[in-house]
Amino acid sequence: MGRAAVFDVDGTLVDTNHLHVTTWWEAFRQAGHHVEMHAIHRAVGLAAGDLITHVLGEDQESDQVSALSAAHRALYGTYFDRLPALRGAGRLLRRLDREGWSVVLATSAGGSELSALRRAIDADDAITATASTDDVVAGKPAPEPVEYALELAGVPAGRAVFVGDTVWDMRAGTRAGVRCVGVLSGGIPRADLEAAGAEAIYRDPAHLLASLEESPLAADM
Image 1 (cartoon, rainbow, N blue to C red):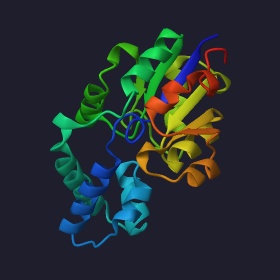
Image 2: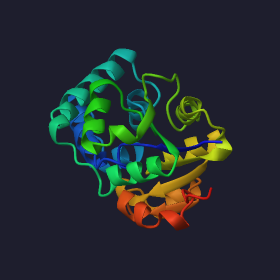
Image 3: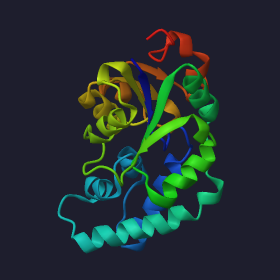
């Protein structure tokens, strides 16, 4: 039976969380909202509409949500040609592919943003499939993105590991019934990731790669 290694992208494979914080902060500022950056950071990893309501509250008009989302897309899009992959990201995916894992991305990004992220990782040859925000109704922390990734890989939850950097990732993976691995490269504290369901935690993809044989992604799973 196959195995699936499911990966979040922002903050997990590509060093973009603080770019998201800055561009969301500017989008909010332009719309007249004074939001502290740490509040935005804690919401990164949610789909755009969910992030907005998490930060501003539930009583947001749909046109305001659309305008804020569009402003963030435009601001963040200026970085598409220089998004930095995290250390070891591409090498980690290729190593897992060689060891027989189906590597699937499960991300809130879609469209041109997802294309830019994949260019940054530069490991398309190792990626089996992608479950993006365009493919599901409910984003993380709902389990649907991870469940769809498992469907694409054709494996049950018991044969999968989900790697992410936010509490939303850990909650989504836990609700989908998969083992969860956290990385600290997104800036979320270790204790928060552990409380949300992380079984093991590594500094970044390079650290996970170096520790692979002792990790939940060991070859003999």
